[in-house]
Image (tube, rainbow, N blue to C red):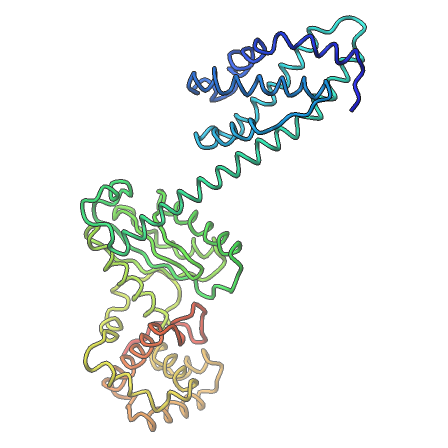
Length: 411
């Protein structure tokens, strides 16, 4: 933009007062901004004053036809972001600085120089958006990088606690506020779709926010696409409607398993137990919700592996090639062996259910009408589900709901 000689001459009158303008901004005009008074004196008198001088000189160079750099603005924006200065305060200082510079131009203007003053105002207003954009972009980039670093460090600490890598008495436990009894939660998001990393991060941020609101503290959580693990101090009892709140946040059915940990040294075992309870609730057809050990006490016991486990699991080998028979058995047990309820859950005629159960009995030799046969069938199903989960295959390895989800398997 070509400026008149009158406009350039008017701007030149501000050259001798650049330092005074910078002082007026940092020790006068900026003082009325909320939060500015709390800044250290060296930040005001050195760094912000230098930035103000740079801004005025950048304007004067542009008026004289020279180019200038925004590098100092970027550096200062990154510093302010690292120090935690609010972005609104930083941007307000730039806006107020523009106004102070306009006042200076107006004060040195003489009668008859109105047109020259308007030319300079055009330059001032045209250059301001680029500066603000540079400052805001740099600030947000720096804050994003800092927050990502803090999240990674926090996740590493939480993972160490859950995996038993933080020994009792470690200073990190004070940092995590985890020196006493705790609650460990395993969270499962049923039916989580295959999504890109951005969509997954957005969903998990909503889950994290819902957890923080539910417990009233910043919750220590390790979350991934299908769920995750959470540790909170024991006094932070989970609300009974926690699964509903999380489900509302992520638009998926949510199941939560809760286990007490007597102290930091017990968190690792509690996390394993909570994860296992979550697996069993899926294997047994329990509806998504809040689950504790008491809810699956028998199933948990029957699913423990020992020297007889492979023999019990093998009882269902004769129907392993007929997944519809295994599913019918699972749903039938989940619905208290009610044939009509089983038929309704599977969308079958009750006679079809009877025929399938008869085939299971013929092939396996398990008498489903006897308590012992029912207990064997439950144990065999749970052990097979456990094997499938550990190998990453089978119905328990996925998060999706299955037909027949309903009450837990009971003998």
